[in-house]
Image (tube, rainbow, N blue to C red):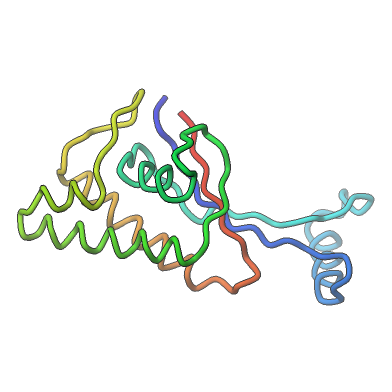
Length: 153
């Protein structure tokens, strides 16, 4: 039990795009022949996973979910991810300077049912570093991949 967080990359297929039709055919014939009677709408990949990184979850709730902490799925732009990456970098610099107040101002921790620690410790730092790695990988994706954040607890 606890806070689990996911970043999903989705690639939608449009019925009027020749390249999409060819790709769909390759996927169905080559990987899932049992699905040939059905329509392939999109592919999705889990490109990010966090466990109890409550400061990152709080950022998504405040900046992507309009304050609704409801375990829903929310579209996330690359621009928003860049903003989060910058916040992580700044918080890491603040912690390196031992300026915990600045880190708390940038990416505060959050209480919650099994949401993990509220300390600005090694786990907090590792969550920030992991977030930067996840975002860096997402920013390299082609523009036809959509990104979506969700959480559960």
